[in-house]
Amino acid sequence: MSKFSTLIAFGFFLSILASSCKQHQDARKPISQTSGSFMKKSIARNKKLVANEETQIEALIKSNPNVKYIASKKGYWYTYVTKNEIDSLTPKKGDVAFFDYEIKDLKGAVIYSELELRPQIYYVDKQNIMMGLRDGIKLMRKNEKVSFLFPSNMGYGYHGDDKKIGTNQPLICTVTLRDFKSETVYKKESEAKLKVIPAPVKPETKAVLKPKDTITQ
Image (cartoon, rainbow, N blue to C red; front, side):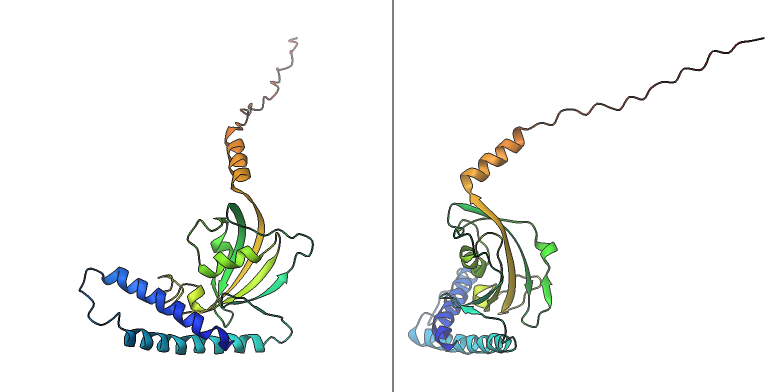
């Protein structure tokens, strides 16, 4: 796993630097923060952070020897819970993906349940979602269920989500891709649904029972 360390560490550095610049751009002019020594120190710190996260993920993978994890080129790992061996198409830019997912910490404790997060409708590569999901969904086929192990830079990074996900927290995301279709098809289907106006429902009419004629003696 260490072959990903430099790449991921540099990613950490860029995300933290961008965030810092955004928050403090009006506070004061940088004196030496852009110097080579600052970058080297930051990358060194991030390498330690990455190494710690890799150790945690590696321990998790080793604790499940019967589960086959695949290392992605982007620095995360994943395993198929349900695999679609028939279809070959995967979501791409210009598609709309419909999926469910849940988020856990590396100990398996649920942070956000599937019920809390559903439904998810995602315009592929056009919406701002978790970086790991943005890439991972494009690996999936319809009706597949995949469990991803994301280091924090592929999740919510240095700041977390300001709710339940903490600083630099690696995550387990289990995703089920229900369906995906082109934006054109989805738009037409949505418009067709809006045009369909249900006919008014007539109230039920009950037969009125007339009183029987009575004969007076």
